[in-house]
Image: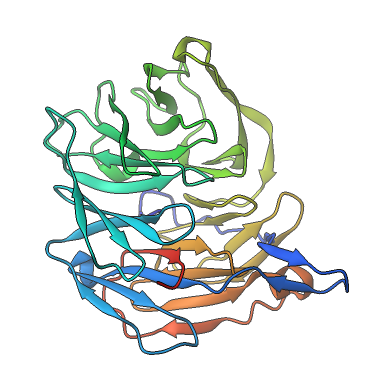
Length: 345
């Protein structure tokens, strides 16, 4: 999940883009969603965890014991990891029955954000305690066991929001952050260690990273570009560079990925187009001014979260007819922070 930022010039505006939905094509030629989605939300600035069933019964609400920072669903949708400032919990699809995951030895965590691989078989948490302390990545497997922990090299950015990361299909974590002297650097972390793979730094500014299936994309000051990367068994075999051509001219500083779709949005510039791309077609799904998060659910819909509302966007009709059928599924939110799809418990 991604959070809004105001560190991008407001004079730029997103160009149109389109999406590829998660759907099945029947022998009749019609398209139908795979599953019904249930949504899990971080609300009230992290003081509340809430579930929402679009078109269903009233939402269940679970009060969080402390302020939640983010949440990510695990494979199958029946369990979710919830990051709090000082710990991570594993919860069921009702966001209840919490069990706390033990922090890695020697780590006093200050969790700010979670990211999942496209298959959701790895969940990475960024810990940033501020005051210049080194950032750390804590990575869990889908069974909630610890995969590895990595300490990022200095200097630590002035804000944790400047460290943007994604988890690849090969379970490595790639992170983009500002480089000393300008531009950006890309860092790769896995069980074998940590390596800065752009030396010298990239001249382009990279605002965010996201996976769409097995491909990685970067939101840059020259549009959204694919990252050319080679995953090896050791960090020394990893190489990375931005492709010369942009895959989208969309100017964005937030990316949202799934196995087939990529969403892009520009924060800090008023109402901007939420653009979705399927690798071929592009389209603008909505024009939010306060997008906090976006999840692409297995029911063929995208769910866009602002600070006060959750909106369903029909990716099937949006792709085929340009009709996104925006529908409010929760409009009584207050300082909502994060959303993920779940399956019904």
